[in-house]
Length: 135
Image (cartoon, rainbow, N blue to C red; front, side, top):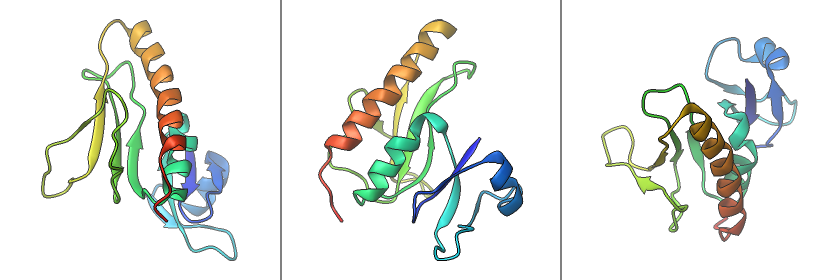
């Protein structure tokens, strides 16, 4: 498990995070000069989430997907949604709690799903790098 500061983009591992976060989802960054929120981050999406946030497409939660889930999917919850969605993604139907979640579902055997999840992480990284800055 990794943790990411959404302000300075410092990445923390379990060992450091256990000292500062201690089973709470969001805390302030332990850096002296940063008070950014530190969030649990899916390691396959670290680069994508950093790129999106640096460009002004602020995110809240994400998951790259897990082949053992009954309905495996990848999602990113945005505070600021890009105009262009990545290929294969749809916007979730808005609810009271989530108005800006993009999602992609995977199907097939566990091996196929695992490979699709890895391929999808690379595609998301490329998509994020090609988005224009809005900050």
